[in-house]
Image 1 (cartoon, helix red, strand yellow):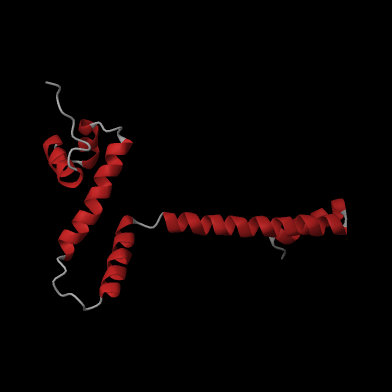
Image 2: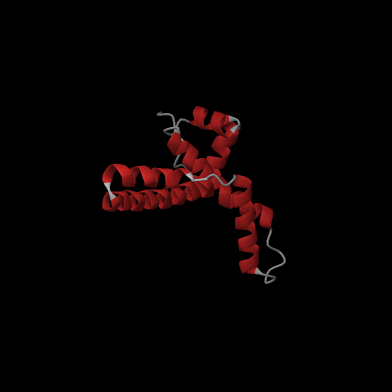
Length: 129
């Protein structure tokens, strides 16, 4: 029984001759390698957020080792994640606090408090007097 690729190679050989068939087969192999690389990259990108967090936390704890038992890891992670999260959402919503609050699932008041905490007045508008 022939594979699909072998049948393809035989047809190319019959239609175009040996050299053209070899060239087409080589191009097919190159294309297959490219497709495999692209598929692998997409699978790595689609790795779940949970797995990425687990990997990051394990990597951090491994690098720190047992040097500091008082890491306050929860607060560290919240601060490290929250600031870029809020900045990114603000940028993606074109600095519209109401939209950003809806995207984040927090109240506008909570959003303003966090923005003031992490960014001073960078994202907090003031009313003209």
